[in-house]
Image (cartoon, rainbow over all chains, first blue to last red; front, side, top):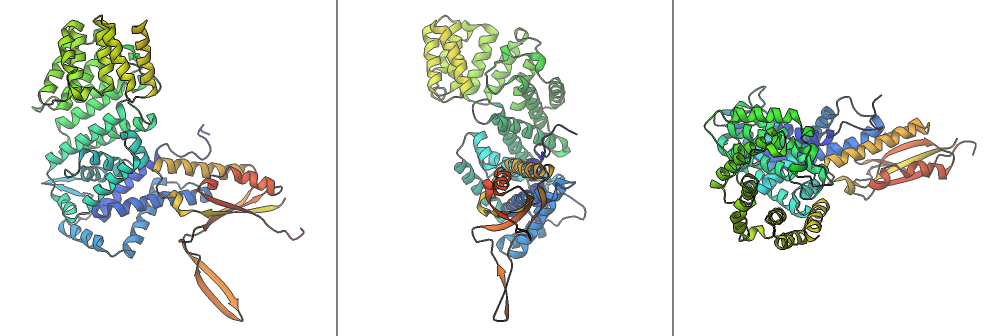
Length: 418
Length: 117
């Protein structure tokens, strides 16, 4: 007997099944029906809820759920001979399914053979805003609920629901469903990678929100990026670099407890995931074989430097500074400027970084940025300016932050005041 | 030992917008509760009824009437049942108390009339 509690199912079974079944039904019945398919998948879960306690869990739970959802879709289609039905027929006439083929998207001559990947590419339609792509990908391909997405993205549930409704409305437009079959792969791939990067970032940044959900976001982003890399047509250097970046960063998750801020210099490096580091480094190596140098390459390069340093003191900061210089060439983000300044601080000392921190102080977007005030406070501390350090720490505490972040800054503030 | 019928009335509105992960946890609670009843020797039978309207059959003044109903649109629908053995109403209610259905619908507890009671 296993130790699992009575009644326990495989962890994450419903969530992963929901994503896969949605993808599979969307291919079978047409992406124009996504909203209806989503409801049918939900109905299947409710049916499992009502039936399994009496009849036991079926031998193949996911197969059972797929069958139940498919039956619901058929019921609804039979009842609903509306415009959506006609549009879907139109879409299928435009791109008839080859016997035995499982492709949903034709990208030039490229055929995406994987249902989940096809759904992912649809969710990242370029006409959707990056926020909407992320929400839709999480909902339809990831099987996350509206409340979970809202907690992960630090948005209000009604705002997320609104975003999803608008996004799905766009996907129902007949042009969009038809477009699916002639998608420009490179442009769409960039938008898919961007959404996956955002999903991972939301999960990785320990700002606030539900810690368990955030971890799931990381896992899910890695899983979907693996799908992208597994397909020859989308296995580009940028995609590999993104996967490398995710794995190298996620390797540190075991040393990022939910209830405490533990910075890189305080982490136990023997607890980092060696397997993910090895795979990440290998991928980064493979990603660097072409002529393409994306932002993912540079960010993965930074993560790799941390991963290979045996101790904090061994970190090759000048290399990291170089990566930040390259990253900033194409990107005016103040947050990048902040990270650059921190790297210079580490590489060349607090005095060398002082002009950079002075410049950061003039950037309005950093005024309400919690990590900026923490970093500036630490920099001021080392420069021997306790007054300035104190002002930054106090400012940080006045901003919205999680309980562990508050404790972390309060402890530093106490040290400065003492 | 007396038998009790637990009639599960569903509230269709409560399960519409629950995330898959949460739904799975609820299913697990239902299964665990049912298995605990069985392990304790209380459970005699349990089943789900088919969704949607059944037939209501009446005969008035010799005239047989068969109508569809009740409809799911009505506020509460009988969705399933558990048949239990329990000492008395108090015991049956205690067994019912930690059934998750108390959160997602309503349980009606009714004693089965035995021949000798």
